[in-house]
Length: 83
Figure 1: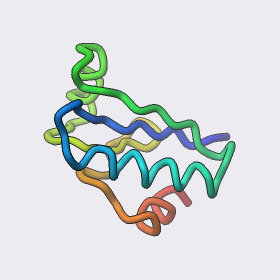
Figure 2 (figure 1 turned 90 degrees about the vertical axis):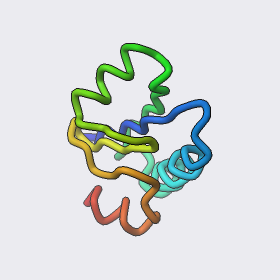
Figure 3 (figure 1 turned 180 degrees about the vertical axis):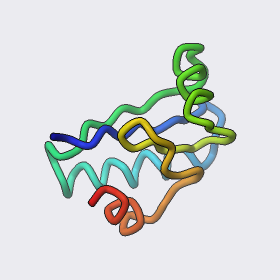
Figure 4 (figure 1 turned 120 degrees about the vertical axis):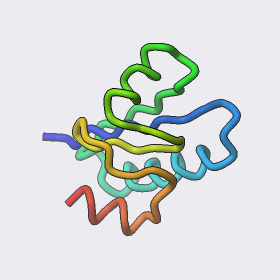
């Protein structure tokens, strides 16, 4: 079963592209073991989902429906959390 990874971003966030890049690197390494979604909080549905997870800032990463990171983790931190 693939790990569900949701990356919450904002169009004006200078740190969000770094978080997306780290998740994409993890996806390149793990392949089908990750189901990745990049979700902009500019969309009200995504904002509601982020609030439900307790997201207080972006970038934020949820793994399997649970908030895992606020901010962009290093690749090794993300991979450890995914194991």
